[in-house]
Image (cartoon, rainbow, N blue to C red):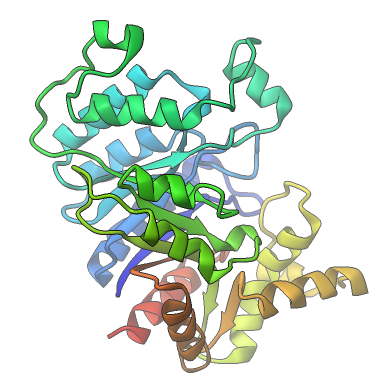
Length: 329
């Protein structure tokens, strides 16, 4: 089972973005040493508690300080940008890091209404033709002439030796069929908290058509996972992200000690329990979590597993990453 990390780059209380970047560089180098296949950074705008607003720039830097781990966007929010610009960014990245770049196709804006207006310069935002827009980007990536006025301009550089590996992102199942028809990998963010029926992935596989990017369907699912050597330690490490999850106040992650002092309401506790029951979030020891992950892999037909581990302490987070690799050794 290939393993990857999905990262929103959450800030800790009192931490600067510069410090988060420095820790992320160290972390990705450690992930590569552990044998992780991929590291993906998200795209969010106007959220002061998340440091990932321009993942493509971060990937370019990470490519220079790593050797083999694949680096991707989870995702690039294509509604915000022109197809030409997106294609040229990813074609440039593939020249800088051949056969190591992933292109996560996101259809959400990654921001609120005000952020959307700022990104679109106040112009109307078109959510109705995003699959057409994605196809134009894919045509540019493969040096295929796209339709319409886009055919009059080449995406530079041309004839790159390798192509960014495209994945259609999903969190509701609506894009599964289209991902299959377009011959893309399908990456589902289960940690977003949307119920996942196995029929979603069956529909993707049933509609899959081989493409220049994939000869067969590929399913990736992302979970929020906290692993530790004991259940008590996992509960302790998970508490800051649990508070952030139920309160959704945009605040940085609390320290472990501060988080233990917070009492959640019955409603908040009920939300957490439901998220764990429905396997949007997982926490515990490798021995306890391994059978759950194996059941999910078999039930949903997962080819690759991604983990989001928002743990405020760097060493604890790295240890949790290490424990996940041990499950699949």
